[in-house]
Length: 289
Image 1 (cartoon, rainbow, N blue to C red):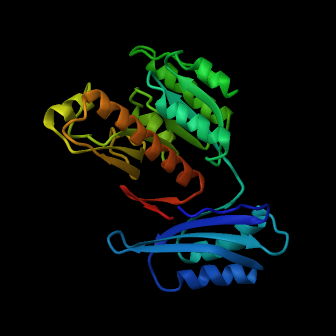
Image 2 (cartoon, rainbow, N blue to C red):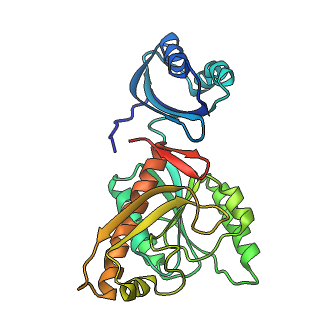
């Protein structure tokens, strides 16, 4: 994916709308009139859904506020029935990480965020266990233990949502959080929660999927990062990673390779979401490079 160097007067406009003539002209004309310069622009017209998608990274040559940009673009947005957003490109997503008993994705995301490889601020780690409290502490990230049982699940989810609202969380990442979210919580987090799972789904469901795959002699393993929806593990896909394997790889070897694939796919999905490169297109996504 392309890299950008955000500045204090740089912004990202994202939009989707019914595909028709004149959209790019209208957007570029608006930016010209408001004294802005296009740094990077990408667009895609989907013949299947009939929708047009666009991401524009632009700089303001004269001082301007975000409020003024919103107010002045509203007429263009209304004219084309756009679903649009404008954000400062330097704005960092506030991310909450959820984890259970497997910590490889959590550790990877904490390292990437701490080293500056991810343009996010991790505001907390939540777990239904206490195994990774010390790991969170080592990165000086607040750790919250929210135990979950069948009887306490509604209260646990209410506590989680309260934390999301209190910390003004932009993105919730299920970094191997092994709890199924309720339909209500999925709706509350729609478009701002990402999950990771092994790409064997739905082929190898249940326990020990890599051992099931080994028994079937698979030649490709991988991982899928997707938005969370009420349909378990079937949300819009953001990124996938695959690894070719041979007959001599043990089940334990598949697990190790699978964990690496999960880390890579999830990290890219989080990065692209934080950079506002991912636009929802029904059950699919448009991901701009």
